[in-house]
Each structure stands twice: as C-alpha cells, then as structure tokens.
Picture 1 (cartoon, rainbow, N blue to C red):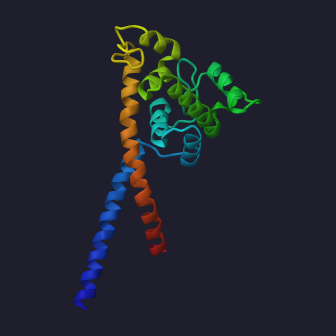
Picture 2 (tube, one colour):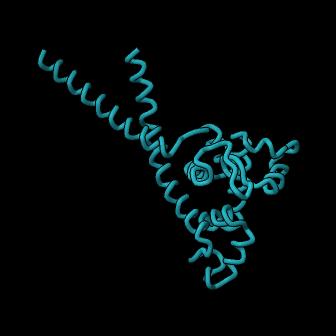
Picture 3 (cartoon, helix red, strand yellow):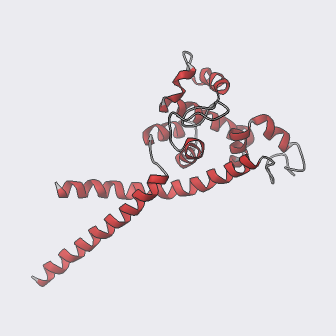
Length: 200
C-alpha cells in the first residue's frame, strides 16, 4: 500500500513538473510564436535552410503578422518588396503570381525562403546574406568591396547601417531561441497530447 502511494506521488510530482515546464515554454512561445510549422519545414528543406533560421527571420521581419506592411512597402510574413516578388516568382514556377497573394503565408514563405537561399548561395555567409536581405544586395556588394567594412571581400567586420547591423544580430539571437523552443516543442507536444488523453 505504501509503495503504491509512493509511486502515485512520484507520478503526480512528475506531472506537475511537466505542467510547470510546459507553462514556461508556453510563455516563451507567446513572444516567440511557432506558426506555419509545416509550411516552414517544407520550404526550408526544399531550399536547404534550417527551419530555425526561417522562424528567426520571420520573427525579425513581421513577428508572424501575415498582414504586415513596412513603410517601404515590403509585405507579409517575410516582408518581400513587390519588385523582388515579381522577380522571384517565375524562378520557382509561379507564373500567375499577383502581388496581392503576398499575404498568403504559403506563398510568402515559399518566395522568402527561396530568396534567402539564393542570397546565402551568392555570398556564402549567412550573416552577409541576412545583411543583403535587409539592406539589399547593392549595398552589401559595395560594403564587401570597401576595406573599411570588409578585409577579405567575403565577410563584413562592420555594417555601416545601424538598422541592418541590429537586424543581423537580432536574427542570430532569434535563431538561438527558436532552436531551443522547437526542441522543447518536440519533447512536450507529445507529452501534452498523452496527458490530454489521460484526462479525457
């Protein structure tokens, strides 16, 4: 009898710990949303990107607001400019594309992940690619050609635009957090489903 009570207490304590950790994870996920997981995973894999990086870019660009429009006119989850979207669309077989579709999460993420992958392939460096995603390839090319900002023509030891400098740092920080959140989600999502099943 005592043994069964001890076992019962152990499982109750374990359940409480799981709930408390789950509440902590939920609080973090309120600020770092985890949405459109299937779409992000699909196009990240298709374009050779880490899903955590895509989550990090979306958080930095729009905080997962599908209707977000910047002052410069960049739109949607990954904040894509109209001219960039029309340039990208035919490259991935979207021949009937209209810019009004940019607010569709799947279309936006499909275009944005492809664009990010082309920048990484072009520059061979994620931070430089992120700088180009934010400030444009023309600016980055001129920085790489200037010893004031780049000593080797491939990496940037200084980014002259404060906004872009902060953006690259913010995406890196977001990526670290999303790496932890997505791992925690993989652990606690199945546990939560099992607990809901037990409660029912």
